[in-house]
Image 1 (cartoon, one colour):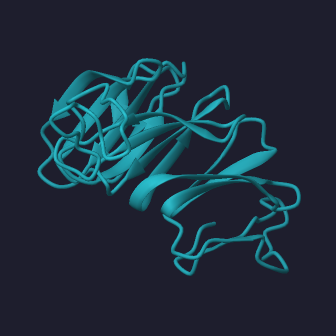
Image 2: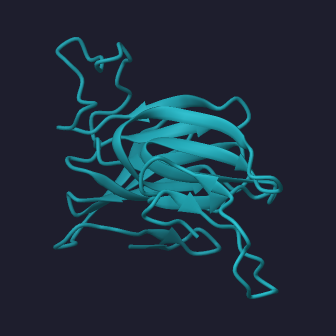
Length: 193
């Protein structure tokens, strides 16, 4: 479980008891957490930072920095090789879990990551897609096949993305308030938000 004081607790789901101590800690509130499919690692999301932890001993495996502001969501690909994170900086970021590195940034249309006239963001990276969220990105989820992921945001949209190219596949509109959650059905044919 993730708490507003920056702590994470690992619970024994069979014993139904509270653990003796805090396993991990962030400096700010934790907004998201997810296990990697192998069960040996998990990731937590906080202010400008994701941390990949070893589940057995709580040791930090990777510090993933890149977002400017709160990271509101994190999801792991079914094969465990990638993470996607959703930030209030209007960006989605894809991460390589083995190397602990940022793979791709999907820039928001009006956000901190919005490119300049040369098509590059503040860090000199070329934008791959000009159809990112127009406001904070609040949710993300990988499809069961790992080839696509979805995002939802304060701009009241849900977007479907190609995970390899970082390209927008489909824009869903119709919500009248921010989108705080999204998930795929087990067969990947339906997306709920």
